[in-house]
Length: 189
Image (cartoon, rainbow, N blue to C red; front, top):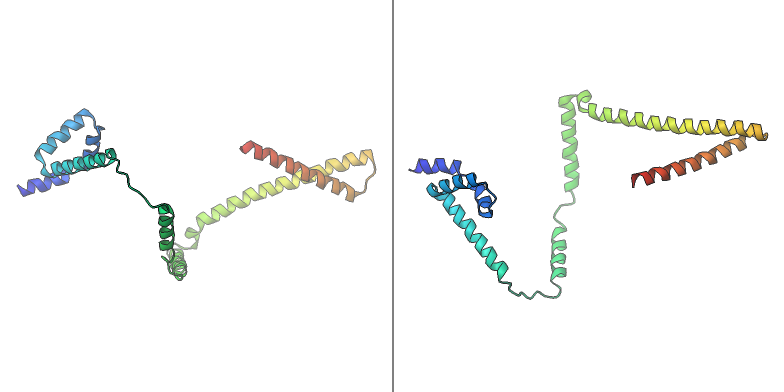
């Protein structure tokens, strides 16, 4: 008889008792659970415990007992919580954690080898470098193109020294970047 109860305790659908009480089980699952509970004392006890808990909870919610809290109850709780949190960690704990992390990193590099351990980091650095190189090249080409256009336009209009052309090109490039940045910022929102 004890081996049968032990076997039933491993097969018991105890996690389905709560959905059963809430009426969330399908009708066929309810029938299976009810037939199991009829022969299993463990599940019957669990069902009775959950029913009594729900009844006690319902009783306490229905009978609104007026509990008078002190005027500074929230402030006292917050103060106690904040004071009990400080000092939980020792000052040397961060140093010990850094040492352990460093030792683990050295161990991983030693076991895997530097090529395998740093391959993902190297790939991220390469990709970031490619993106930054692209934007750097884009900015250079924009400024260079703007300078060429302004210089050629200025050469046809008035003979202007090269330093003034570069100044105009720089001012134009600055305003173009500000306008494009505002446009991109408005695009995100």
